Image (cartoon, rainbow over all chains, first blue to last red):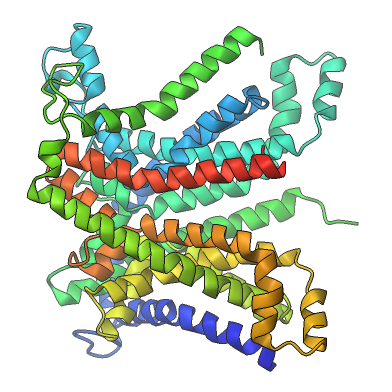
Length: 278
Length: 260
């Protein structure tokens, strides 16, 4: 290492050290090698977490809600990007939710979709429901409807922006050629536009999915207590009044492992579908 | 797509993106909005602001502003310093630093917060504003390093070498050559760093331990306690800086011809 590189190395190490120390501690604590109640090597805490049905139900539920929201947001983003490719008003409208913080978006979902929320009032006005209890429970519900809607609303602008960036930097020659050869708009989209769009959009879709798995604010306001979403379960363990249970906060590593697996799978898929440059 | 269907799509898009914001705006102005009323019973903001909870929101707003104002420039300074060095560093060091920066950005905030909590508590800074600032600095610098690497990738470093050949010190090269060229991007970076700090909730909760009350923490507590009017008001305040930043960015990209 030369003197010129020294400031960057020092700054990087300074920034990375708390994370590395924390991650090391989070790994060593459940193994009984650090922290409160450390009595030598043990796999007890890890076993407790891996055996607990809460963990797998929480992980499954978190991944399912994140997946449905990502698919919905991707579909909407692709449709809007293709249809409003040249509309400035469309671009401005599409990116607006990006400025609203997740916790604020969750509150808006609560006010709109709650049993005494705005949509419930509309159904009352239309005579479809007579009391708040007759409106379906969309908030804190096991199906996670409000959470999925809120997730999709927040991820939609990022995915639309990415889809627009892909479309506006891709030549329309192929689409025009397909139309000239007799393809209708549906065939042109399916055979020409979508493959190009997906190749550019896939990393953003995976990033959105991985981000939603670790999202804390929205589940804190909209998710049910059973099953408990993985980020909420991790937080609950990390502030548990029983110090020994805090070792189980390494649950957070599960979200990281899932994110890492997604990135790895994407890299392999990309290497498979994209030919090596000559 | 014909004009008529494009108009319908635009209307649907406006409804989808704007209705949550309108809902927050309307609820923020309304002390009572009893079921099944479609419109609020009355509009009045002052009573809720003048309560003790209103005072807590103002104080948490100030805490958030202070944290964003300190974290933004500090993370920009660190991010640009790291990036300026690593773009010219050996491949191994460059990849390692970028991986660390990317890790700080993509790690789930709650897992990240748990790890940072260990380090901050060990330093005796748990539940303090300094501890929260240091914790915010880590992800903000991660973002800023990635941002600044993009800036320096197309930077002409021969200017730097020429100034050094002519006898300029390292500080003079930074203040007289590099800064005048990158000052616009550095300012954007400082805003981005401030916004990263502005939106942090999980990390603030874990490191601040409920003692350091930023606007997101106060908003969560207001919603959980059922104070929807003040919660909506806090949510709107929280949304203003990011929306302004997006507006400025859009104006900037349109002027530079880089708009979508």
